[in-house]
Image (tube, rainbow, N blue to C red; front, side, top):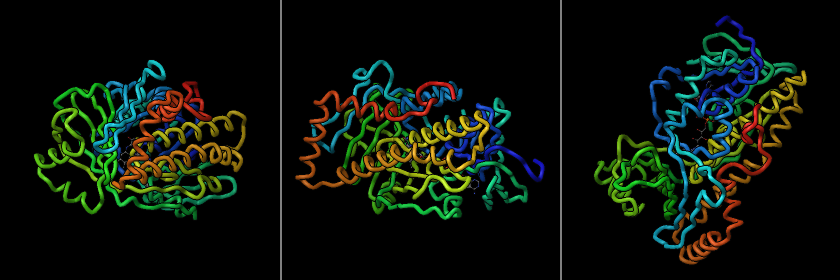
Length: 405
Ligand SMILES: Cc1cc2nc3c(=O)[nH]c(=O)nc-3n(C[C@H](O)[C@H](O)[C@H](O)COP(=O)(O)OP(=O)(O)OC[C@H]3O[C@@H](n4cnc5c(N)ncnc54)[C@H](O)[C@@H]3O)c2cc1C
């Protein structure tokens, strides 16, 4: 790369979100440079982080529109039903995809296959440049453009910068954008299990006093576990040998699918909530975890981010087609106001559910169980919840509606 690279957009952070945005913009003719401090070769070599994503139906449409789903689909397991239970209670909420149509409610895909698709399609995108391993050390934002200074002394000049640099977002902090955040005192223990009985494409969410325990179907007789445990207890659980660890999980989840058997290693993710005070500043937009991080209980963090990507790409592409300045304040305002409501709603729902269910207080338990049972008997409300989980309600960007960018 020359000492100065000129681009339309510079994206700081080439995680799943930054790279997805790069694909979206480049597919519509916008020159985009994505900078990530990790080497892509390591990522392509399956540097697996244990996470499996619930890709909602609406997100799948975005990924299909970008030509990325074709690579991920063969590694994905469909979710046909979702069963929500409150500990050992027999009252539960059951979402059946047939109540809203023929399509699965979503798919579970391991993060390595999402990453592989994002990296594998790079050669087809001449307008997308991934610069890695490289760090953005400073971002200068002027009246008519931005300059990203890189650790190795080079720089990128662009009209607009996007921070996709994760939850601790150095770019957000340097821009003076504050964030509201708190920890949940919970750690997500993440691993893969082998099952004795077929999962039948059912995703399970079991609310336990320490936190929600999710079992998500993977291809074959395997499932991904996201087990939110009290942070002070999690290290003890993580240190158990495989036999004890598997038995502990089975006690928590129950015997519905036979004994659960851990396969491979376990990962731990401390959980917390974060929302940036603003999603934009002069010539800067925030996307993904840099803008918001939510509890994984509904499996919606990446889905929210994919909607950020689709919305931001749409406002940029539209302004470029009209010959306007893609980094102008009114373009960024449109993005920020578009994304605000969806983000706040999901933040409130995931935070509220975690608070409501992560306790064992008798009267609270009774009320919430009656609530689950009531929703289960109200088809219209249930359908609305299902459409939310599928990411098919609200003011959706074109890509999420299955239309071209
Ligand atoms: C246990 C768990 C389970 C989850 N399950 C789901 C699920 O089922 N469904 C779902 O939708 N979501 C889920 N999520 C949420 C999802 O993982 C995140 O929302 C998503 O991965 C955020 O991606 P990101 O690209 O914004 O951030 P990150 O993945 O953090 O990427 C940030 C990138 O920026 C780079 N970077 C940072 N600073 C710089 C710099 N200065 N210069 C260059 N590069 C830089 C980093 O190297 C990194 O690659 C889950 C989260 C957890 C913790």
